[in-house]
Length: 204
Image (cartoon, rainbow, N blue to C red; front, side, top):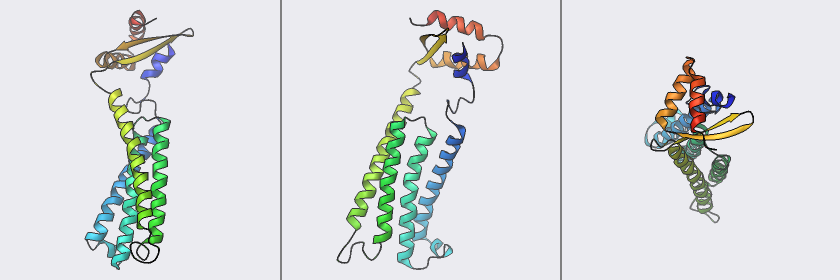
């Protein structure tokens, strides 16, 4: 019953995901949060001078850029850390791309073409970023909602058993799942007994 062993192998925190991707996502989230914090401090404290920016407009532009990059970075980190579908990942990536378009427009527009002048770009910039952030947030929300549903303690865990090319499924409670996983990982000679127990409960 190779598939049963595979289901319980490895670190359960990653649930079949690449640990490097999970750690990279967590690091991206930390960097995104740090960028937002630095953006706020750059316009509210003397931190901007430490960063080599003494002009107020330049400090605001730096803050807008850092904050604009930090938010989609945190969105990306969520779908990297949590189990998420290709659709959810693609949605967040697309939203992030629109955010980057908004940031690029901001770089061109601020401050001289922001709200003053013959060709202002504040509306276009804001809409590009708003649409991107809204799209990314929606797919982050769906990823978090589906993750919560899969880990609902009141739900059931569905296992697929494969033997000699024939697949069967069985539903077990979270408590039973944890008991089976602990027994198999401990390698205490209970694997065959667990397999027989699950096969007796398997659905045809």
